[in-house]
Image (cartoon, rainbow, N blue to C red):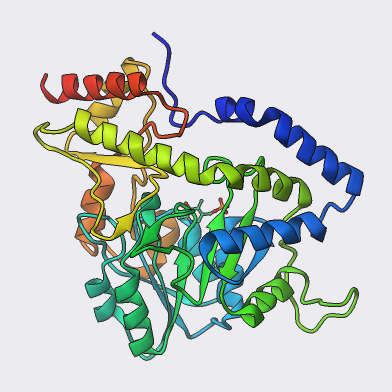
Length: 369
Ligand SMILES: *Cc1c(COP(=O)(O)O)cnc(C)c1O
């Protein structure tokens, strides 16, 4: 029996081989490898894709988060509220600027940051709210826009898993003051290495991100402030330009595969399928189901040569790295329960209908054993 991986980047590459080769050849001919015309063009195209005016390419999604908080002048003495069920980079960015991480629990149906839990964490020191569009499902941005406004805090989006997702017909990335994207290879739009982007409507703010990302310099060897080195390179931009033209189609395919999974997995006792909130267009970076005996199910699928993932097995407040925050087990029960039960099934545009059927049959066999 052939094995089914979590993602299949080789098949995707084969479908784009000639276009990517031509794009890379162009970069090498131009010999402008950092910044330059191709990076600028891709920034414009990606900003348009998000429905905003400006974008700044950076080295990776983690830096996009860090540079956003820096550009907003968030630092020591400030608090930033975020979710404990996310990739660690979301929280790292807060500490990296010297601010304090404040976690709030998540919504049990979408597993995104819960606005009600955020509201009770707001203090006079709250400088930003940082929701994550987890698994490609938009967070409740209308509520967060309102909460941030009332708290005089900034709203920053971690959209690393949600390129092209929509809420009320509006793209994620267009709700916050700044929004952060990752082009890590396995993301819905992935580079052939590390890459990231900060987008916003506010041109000045995006130029501030660019300033920090380029050694605090607008003019070579003149430094207004102390910055860092975090830039998008032209090889990645060229590849991303090719792939950006396919993202819509790939997201649609992910959505239809999610629909097939939903049909094929309907009515299994104790199995919870990912929900899509009203007005949302999720882009299924991951298709995460919930099952009490998650580890048993995952082991059974592994014996059927079906790969799975857990996003994420331990909420951030319980990680050793964050013991210093003094948040014991029980602090965020919804996130803690989700971490015990979530299981991501294979999800990528090249997945076939037959493969979805085979995966669903294996899940059903285990659940009804
Ligand atoms: C991938 C990811 C990041 C970090 O992006 P990198 O490009 O790997 O640095 C940040 N937040 C979330 C939610 C992610 O999934």
